[in-house]
Image 1 (cartoon, rainbow, N blue to C red):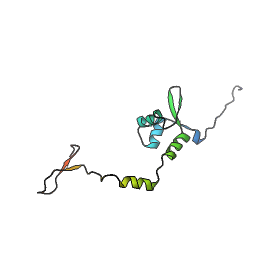
Image 2: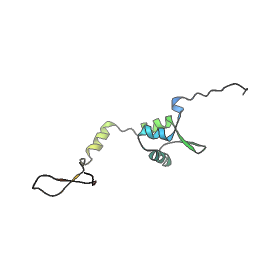
Image 3: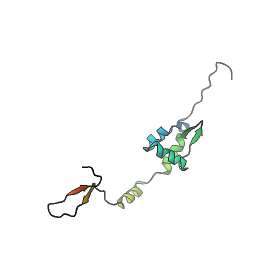
Image 4: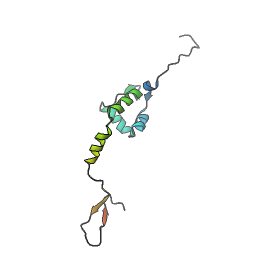
Length: 106
């Protein structure tokens, strides 16, 4: 290449390499969880010079592969137990219901 000539490489958005912090932010998980996805072979990555990057196209495909139809999600949620309000039954019937904090916080 001749001196003084700039060579510009244009990378499309889908070919862009994401840092792990970006991957974690997009998936709304912690960086450790994002690294675990790679370690377990669930999410593809690019490794070079001691860094780990994820191609945007691979992250997009990961998200598409893990989409759950809303009807399936509704069925899964309906089979879950009712949410706890953080209280336990104390066994006392007289004097009304008294809750006892499960976590120790009041």
